[in-house]
Amino acid sequence: MNFNTGLVWLRRDLRLNDHAALSLATHECDEVYVVFVYDTVILDELPTKKDRRVVFIHESLTELDEALTEKNARLITAFGNPLEIISSLAYELGAEIVIAAHDDDPYALKRDSQVKEQLKTRNIEFKTVLDHLVKERQDVMKPDGTPYRVFTPYSKAWRTAVEPKDLSEHAIRFSSLKTPSKLKLPNAKIANYSLSEIGFEPVDVCLTPGLKAAEGRLKEFLTKIDDYGQARDFPAIEGTSMLSVDLRFGTISVRECFRAVANLNSNGGRKWESELIWREFYHMLLANFPEIGEGKSFQPDLNNLSWPGSKEDFEKWKAGQTGYPLVDAAMRCFAATGTMHNRLRMVVAMFLTKDLLVDWHWGEQYFAENLLDFEFASNNGGWQWSASTGADAQPYFRIFNPILQSKKFDPDGEFIRKWVPELRELDNKDIHWPFEEDGTRSLLTPADYPDPIVNHFEQKSKVLALFDKQAR
Ligand SMILES: Cc1cc2nc3c(=O)[nH]c(=O)nc-3n(C[C@H](O)[C@H](O)[C@H](O)COP(=O)(O)OP(=O)(O)OC[C@H]3O[C@@H](n4cnc5c(N)ncnc54)[C@H](O)[C@@H]3O)c2cc1C
Image (cartoon, rainbow, N blue to C red; front, side, top):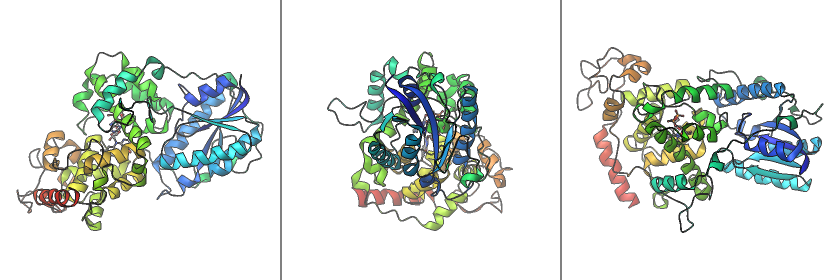
């Protein structure tokens, strides 16, 4: 053993299996304590006290503490600024090392480097390990040593580079896990804080939190993975895994996800792997182009693009009152559940930027505040893809037609009917566009459904001119 005592600081790895930090700590230390900090730097910024992410984390930690109890250990939770907690707690517990998983979000990187400095002054080591990705940072680079900017060659290189050990299970030696008899540190306890103690209120997460539920989602998804390639684009069908929030908070191991499909002879499985590699791609971009984390466009010449879209249109987009049925259905579903299907994220992001000419940063922020699975790298990547400012983005002249998207991906109007009740009575042909061709109201238009706020074709010409003039 290298150390007598270690402290594992959980952040985005809220599970008790295949766990890099817990595996390392329990094999390298005689005794290991486990802590999660409800970080007030993050919590204080949240716009509402009914935040689904906080409830998801809280419930997952309750389950995790119960599972630890079965292993004769308990979870320590703390509430406050990690800069004031981690080094004091490690010192109080007599830890010689603190181990955590990598987190490359801009705030987390800064926080971790400060925590490391603080621990150093107390002669405590700080070690972070790769857990939430399979390949990260500079693991997969171009032959000339520079980062990839295009997904397809990155994905090929990723598949060539990945080795069995990258996907192997990181087992935990549970006998090393320990519980302190008591804690002196204020704002820390040997149990999970209650939601109200951390200043939040219950809200329906719309998806069961926790490790067991995540395993259930993976198992259920594997029964239909062969259809994934076709089903994944239709929001009315449950054709995707719904595991993004689990990957975000680590209630499932990404290695387990890759292992689950590695030996399947399934085109759906290959396609799903490819989506998981998109996630790795966006994280790799953030790590190698940190200016992305500072609000910059990936394509520097597009930083000066001045989007003329109005606050008023932005508010109508948020409220699902644009007069474009699929866009409205997606935005209303998002407001009610905090989740949005990938096809719809592309449709609404493209609509905001290319039809309403609104700055993509506004949409990115709105998603960041409300997405259950909000992940800086993927959210930024998705927005810059849609706004055509990103790496390997949709070319600016290829603009989704929201009515055609609706006809193609919600052909029977099933998703629209669920979320836009005003349109429920319309037939499958009219539901995608309940207006005259030019957007004026027709006999079919329900009285309580809004007029289209823009004309798609007029806006298309404007956005093309905007890119042509300002960016090129
Ligand atoms: C504008 C926009 C914003 C987005 N914001 C986020 C975000 O904040 N967090 C997030 O996890 N994903 C984001 N995505 C990607 C994608 O929409 C979600 O990952 C997906 O809808 C999650 O559903 P699922 O778990 O059922 O996915 P599945 O189809 O089952 O895919 C499996 C996993 O692969 C990853 N993945 C799938 N598609 C993508 C993608 N295009 N980019 C990156 N990773 C992907 C996710 O981790 C997902 O859970 C965004 C996409 C767009 C267009």
